[in-house]
Image 1 (cartoon, rainbow, N blue to C red):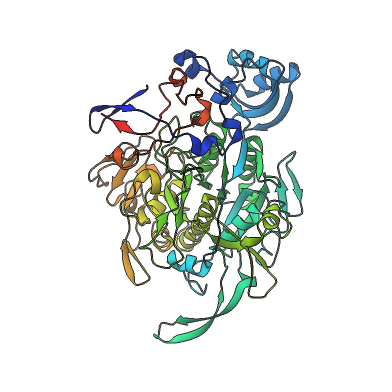
Image 2: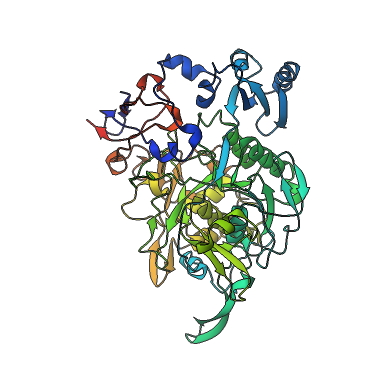
Length: 611
């Protein structure tokens, strides 16, 4: 068995099981083909190949789609070698110093020994992060539970903010009929510009949650005015979070909701290259694939980090692998890539129970928990409403055809809507709130908010769920009201280390008549930081800093009781054993035992912890 040592208790603990079936059964590519033979651990982890490719090193005659990353400046040499060898070259990605190619399995050994090659990664299939659901929560309730104006007459609307939705496309309709919706970029076999369409329907739903106008759902309602009297008002029931934001649709998923990692990276590259031309401020990634390698060598993770360094806020879904699909038992370490990217805002799913009140909110059981494989990073960063949400439907899509029981019709009796659940929806809601934050900030200050600052403000203002660990809820539940007020108050032009609040901000939000204190924490890497951290313009919020890396905090930070978010009170999150074939194809014999010889020192396996 693999041993782990907890610095907090200085007690040796034995890890007895793995989080397994929740991911393995959801991605057929991960199913282990029985117990593999032992291989030297040090050799495995010195390999340039990710774990999936290591399984194919002896499969002569098989062709493999891969992404090859080179040391800086050596990419052209590596590419020319593959081209001369007769391999099919895909695209080059400057954002990660990599290129995609189709190679033969027998070429893997040569790539291992090539000094112009740093890593070779599987060009993995990515899928959308929508979960099974039924019923519907009225988005007017969703807006109110976030502390937003359900009528839409007050506060920011996302005007001027550009959002690249990397997904299955977008179908224009009553709710999605303006901005950048008259064109779409397709990356499977691309990139190329086409008329917008969505043959799966996921991208349209995500876009609707972010920026749907709700025009097709407009109806009459009563609302209490500032005078304390009831007034008849027009309410767009299925309105998105930021209805004036511009959606730039980058299509990478097909009619089945699947695509290739290389296409996602190419779409991210496109967003970075065209950031100024298309005025892209945010990227939404409601998709993912299993984690096959550490984040430092994962090209999708590194593409996200490159986008953040370019000044784009990246919001990613955590994944829907928080429980065993057969037994319903909860499990940890189900975060998918690129949700494991340090600088991404990784979002889990919150079930608001269909009420405005935050007192009955729960983390949806399917929402992936941390930590991340290999790196043991604390994820998700926060949770947001994502259960049974209604948004614009793509009438000619697979999802709309397959799920007639999830269809809705607007107040105009003709506009189609669809109910979906999942961390995809949570990421979309968070992306919409980020758009509101950016607009509110830009109305007050010339210096823009960095992606790291946006992430810190979201975490600091989040509302912590009592009794729920950091690996399940991150810093807490999304609080749009608090995040927007903070964003409108911080002045990035002040010197590093200086107090940057231009106006006072009360660290609480009143929702449904209840005053809710903010969590006032920032999870930096695996460390939970308490105090007034975000009230200062710290080096940590700089655009060039990778989230979680070592920084000098200075004397302005009130640390409180410093806590390691991964190892703090492990019994609260590691009480469940899930048996079965293991994540990443570690392999299991017919009797269910795990081949521990294939587990390396940087692989963190989670389960029951016994002294």
